[in-house]
Amino acid sequence: MTENLTRMCPHCDAALAEGAKYCSSCGAFVAGDGESTLESAKAFVKNTAAEAEQAARGLMKDENAQKIAGGAAIGAVAAILLPISMATGAIIGGGIMAYNRFAKKA
Image 1 (cartoon, rainbow, N blue to C red):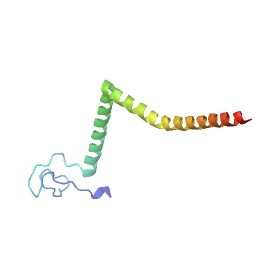
Image 2: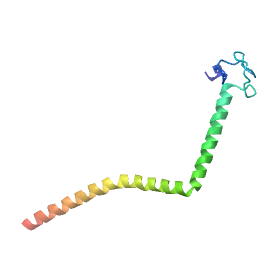
Image 3: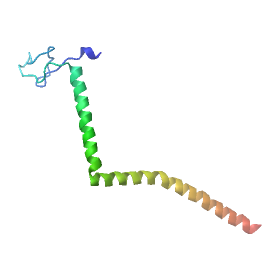
């Protein structure tokens, strides 16, 4: 499936012949050494992933980004624990009220 991919001219979107350095439709110079579309895609993904990793590493060193990430983590923990603690408190409170009510009757 990937073998059928053809390069496209960045100027006019015409299909380029394998190894072409100029577009046969518009005559524009086509950058690159005629590598296949699959190889171009692989290189693009690899470079993009490397750039994303570099940006993430830079953010890890940024004090403001660390504060924002810390706040987001605290917010996530609170969003999980708050409903649990409220439900637990309601159950315990209901148990105490029930105990007091029935203990006074006995």
